[in-house]
Image 1 (cartoon, helix red, strand yellow):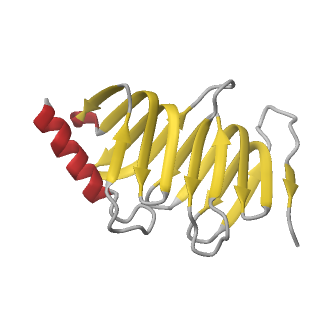
Image 2 (tube, rainbow, N blue to C red):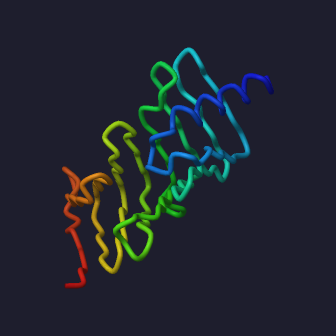
Amino acid sequence: MNKLIFLFLSLLSFALHALMGDHKAFVDVKAQTVVIDEPRGLSTYTGNAEVTKGSLVLSAEEIQIFSVKQTVSKIIAKGSKKKLAHYKQSQPNQVRSVEANAQTITYFANQQLVRLEGNAHLIQGLDSFSGSILSYDIKKDKMVAEKAKNGDQRIKFKINL
């Protein structure tokens, strides 16, 4: 099992090579419980789970990493209403790191897109956004906020002009 975990983490490190532009950084995963399902391309980390790669830090009660042909396709971090999932990453064009919290944070590796759902809040530089659903395109430095389809929560934002 130790060899399997080492192999998986080595492959994960290779697959995440282009994840956020910090090409030389290794992937560091911490959790209380790890379940690796290689045939399904799914690894689940539970219990104060944290994934770090370079300046990217993703933490939640549960983190799932999905891969196709040994390449990471998406990462889902699941929190709760009481303890939200957390995302943080340095951006070259920002003075401060981009930070976000939500009940569920999904990172789509190929698109370099972060989707926040449920009590979503994102801080980018001096600007902040809140809503049911927030999508942040890392490459384009673009933010889209929307309300839930069945909700009436309005989008809130504060920008520094």
